[in-house]
Picture: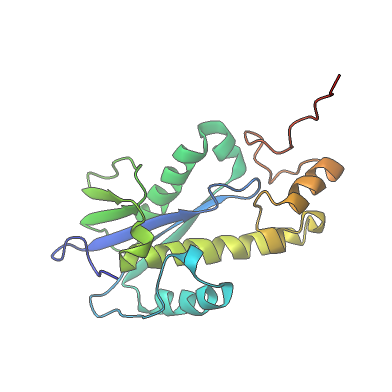
Length: 198
C-alpha cells in the first residue's frame, strides 16, 4: 500500500462510511499519517473483519499526525441528498483536522473543492493509499459505534448487527414498526408493493 500520492505534500486522506444505509448518519474521516507509519493489516475497511478494524482504530488515532471524524445526520441527508451529504461529511472532517493539509486524496470519483486545497479523487483509493485506508477504518468504526449506541433506543431494528443497512430483517422491522427519526426518508425504505396477478 502506498504512503503518498504526492510525496512532498502534507497529505490528508479522506473517506466515508454508511452511504448506502437506510438509517443513521453518513460518517467521514480525514487522516494525516506520518511517513514512518507502517501497518501490514491496513486495508480498505470493507475487506477487514470487525475485530481487525477495532484493533486498528486506536493504533491509527494514536499514531496519526492528525485525524478527525464527522457525522452528517439524516435530516441533512434527506435535504441535500446522500452524495452531497457524503462530501459535506468529508469537508467537515477536513475542516476539523488540527493541522491544515496541503493536499487531499479522496476515495471515489466525486468531491468538491474545499479551502482552495488541491485534491485528487482515486477510485478504490482505500485499497491503494494508507491515509485513505486509515480514514475508511475510522469512519466505519466510529459509525458502527454510533449505530450500536442508538440500537439501545430502538432495539427492534437490530442496528447493533446490521448497522442500518437494508437487510431483510431491517426492512421487515420497518414494515412492522414503521420508521424512526434515524431513518432516511428520502431512501426507499419498504419493498415494492406486491402486484396482483389478474
